[in-house]
Length: 578
Image 1 (cartoon, rainbow, N blue to C red):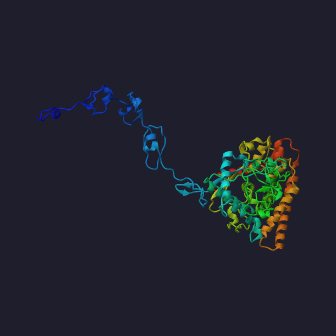
Image 2: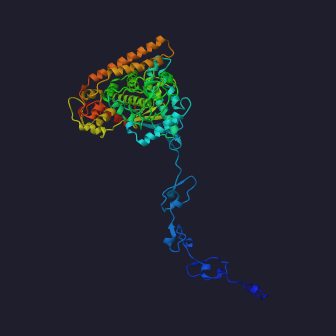
Image 3: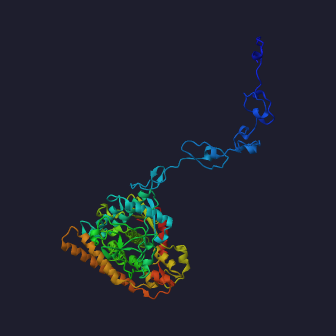
């Protein structure tokens, strides 16, 4: 070292050799460069992939491997390691085509407003702006999967546990029901039955979506007329312990204040208590029922024929109010909380029942609008505001969206568009149905030969069978429960009459009850006319006993082509049917 120095000595001129100058074997690299312990193992290390020079665009792998080659030490770079811009996410992770557009996903704009209960609640968004109503499809209870039900039940339980007045708790919601039958104008109090309850179940549904932060939660509905045969109705899916629960004989406990009342101990309402109103039901504070084991309801064919024959909304509204009382008082029982107006909405089956009543109104609006071109989207005096919610009745009539087969409301600036799906679907297109029949008699008339009840139910629910077709073709296997319908209508009407006349004298209350009784009489007479027009026979299969009519029959169908053509024309039109 110091080669030019003239101070000659070992320490001035010399330095001990280190690993830095040690000649390592080929393929090995130097280590411990300052060490003077000169040996291959001290000074050298075998080369690994960690130091291998990979080609441009490739990355190192197997860093400790000493098997030096491009395939051992290197891998081609993929999108998984590509650095995307801030806010972008990686896509196509295995792709080797490295570019921002190949490897990265641009941030997705919000596609739906959050579930916050606002005017924009859950509505679709386009380019950051709310556009169109929130689409909601309500399914019949038999169509619900366990997964879907679990989400619904979780939201309901959370709502029940909440505290506060309407709309922040289930009990607060239950407390407003009686206000749906009150109004300073007695005529409006009766007229608001369908619009008011449509608003109530809509608000309930929205609140559940907010609590669950889930825009897909909807209310189920229960088609009680399909299950309404005596001896069969309590086998319905709705009473299973993994649904609403409370099937007679399933282990409910007797209320210690009145043994005629059975507390619900399984299903959705297991162990639920009334927050208010126990003093009205013998001090029985649990959600309870008192079933009539022999109860029955009109079959679906009779009810839909009944709906088709009623064209005036005011009359239709009254008849739905009268008929719906049978589930409240005849099926759930006279001593149930469902049969007492002030506490009826504490039982969650109330909401499934009223969703079905709304589904029947939906059917009425759609059927008369499409088939006959009638205006089913308003009524005389429906510009009046309903009780409690204080919005025009007309708002909840909505408008029909033919493309999506849903009703959009409130009218003017719809926030939701609600549709319903029946328990069974036709297994053929309506056009195929038309082509299957052979021409019979005069005019447009077809014959459809059915072989099973589900097929017929699907046609009924789609409105493909007119009241005349039902009259000519239905063979009923379920007697019309006249006495039970009349009793339940009058029993329910007793409470409704008092609610309608809440600000009147006792004489006014009696007058309201008498009006309700007269309305019950009229509805039953109308049902009897339809029932008397149907042929009768004994059921020969379990399905025929359950559904209440013969299924293997020739169904004579009138004017169905006209109804279908009107539906097609409306769907093809860019403007919804007014």
